[in-house]
Length: 284
Image (cartoon, rainbow, N blue to C red; front, side):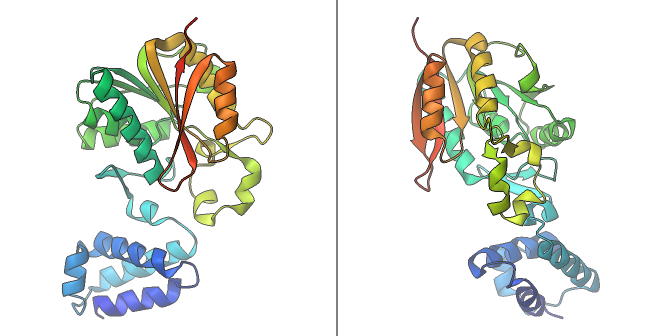
């Protein structure tokens, strides 16, 4: 059986589950994962035979894809800021919108100086903390998360990508203090109201960690409130607070931060949706 035969069979199996524009890149990623062939090799050698073991691996992967398991969890790898990160069901899959948040922090650091103390709250795979350390080698970066399993993934990623990060287990909703004083505090916390779960894709709700996604309907800004309270104690003079937010929480977040004595700047993502906030304490 040739690579092209396998690819066409997979398309037929999966076309009811995925749109063509989504399916083609998924298959390319899967083929590279199983065969080691990149896209150019796949195109040049589409008639090359696949081994029996590879055919079995393709069939097993198709079963997982039909069940809604994300391709990133099947391959154990996701890309962020041009680097490959280990991912599994203990951590969220990094999103391109979050890369924009990292870019914004790097812009700020280039103005203020790169030797900053940075804290990443709810680090998950470690992608924000690691990307910042790679972009700002002089920065001292600390990352916290409530999940020991997530911290294990993050530490593995930091080791693989040669980024020196201090990882600290901490429940941000049940602490009165942070591990130090920081020039930048950044967080992409859970922010999706539970009521939205029913409208979301199965690939997300059934496989990505709900603890990292959802918040109570009655208090969707609970993490932002807790982090902002702690930031007031742990930001250095002129320190900055950066958040990723739900697309429809922009105005509510600006109001919340204003009430907590922060000046807030809202930014849209590449899709034109409110997605990021930078905040600093107002002068007293």
